[in-house]
Length: 507
Image (cartoon, rainbow, N blue to C red; front, side, top):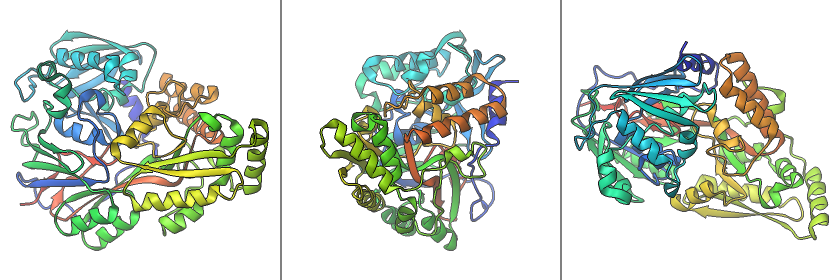
């Protein structure tokens, strides 16, 4: 059995998945029209070595295609620019590319091109978030369509990296010619070609007439707009200024369904909440435990997300990873006060000053920050300052670990994100969190090929994460993609994106 098949069996028990749209597509997909998508922030880069950062996964999929795709609905890996990625033992893998692929500048999209891009991710000067994934493997070009990939250790989760961290391949010719400017004028082999990028406003991409999977993409143009406020995006959707929007609030999905629009829903891993640093005062377990006792999830949900379910723990009761140890601690202001008093008595008596880092321009997150600030203020000597940053500064703070509490969802529906964020050397571990028990459990999710063992290991890791107060959220993460009835084929991909090659506008 290939690891891809084995992993899909394990994931078939996971929470998450795309739910039905309001209307069925009318007839066969049609060519033409423009897809205009909007979200609350923009990509920081469309260079393949930094695509895995934040919202960049979406536009990078449009420009480069992906070697493999993780299907949220079926919870399986599917072919993309590669036909397959298989193994017999979790250590020796074979990546098989589609034959006769070319980049839009005529350069062959072959095994040498993939190897060139993966080698580039290892360049420390590029600060690639994909470097950790590339460091864990070696590769050898066997023939123009085949790479032999060797993992440094048994790792049945490797397809995750082929579908995200190492998924995007740019033209080696263009990368060499453009150098540092390649990220502003990328050359890929995906369904669309970037023709303009007005940073902070919108990105314009036109159909790639040489795309391998004809007649896809169906749309002639893809426009990606940045509209920070949910209300503004929804108003733009109603006015016809955009025809696809991403949102995390259910009330907009409900309004859209009532208006006869299409809604595609996906449940993600984790939730709307904060990642908590393991540095500064928060390196002390007493401060972290006190922070965990301060949260009042019900107050936040009633005020900001009325009508939605309150997250009482890391995993819902119907999750295969559910265990009582994943329940959040109850609010306990007296207990938090004692912990802070003990810490201050030992460290000189100064107040504990923490920051809550969030994205600017979101009324919802501003309200959440103010509620958290008031909750923290119930403990004498524990203060919370709100720091609202624009997209670039926010992602810089997140990736550098320059935060105390930062608004965060794990992103994506795949539980592999737990490994990335919470193992000591995880590629997305920016908080400095380190716990031997969590490391051991998450390592088992890579070395075991038994679904029950892997699910139990995830549950154990989640219990350790909750116990250490490394991450706290008040609502389980869901993403809604909303479109009018004449836009079809919208399938959730990554956290806030869709398969741009599959979507079409009814003419």
